[in-house]
Length: 84
Image (cartoon, rainbow, N blue to C red; front, side, top):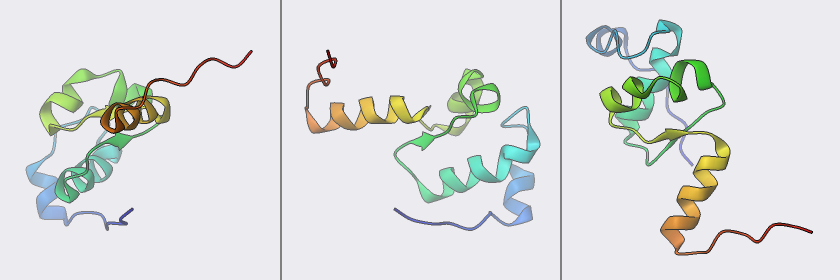
């Protein structure tokens, strides 16, 4: 895990328009700059439900459940069996 600061204003200005909600831009750009494997969020409206955000950023964006699925896939683990 790595904690990163908000990107400088000049970098944010260059990336303006990548999301429909500019208040979320620092989060998106920080993830891009940190070259993360995944951007995990519960913000469906501004990140997940707008596929252009993932396309523009080059990030794989999803919910915590999606991230668990992605990690299991990378580990070669089969999905957990449903509990009775």
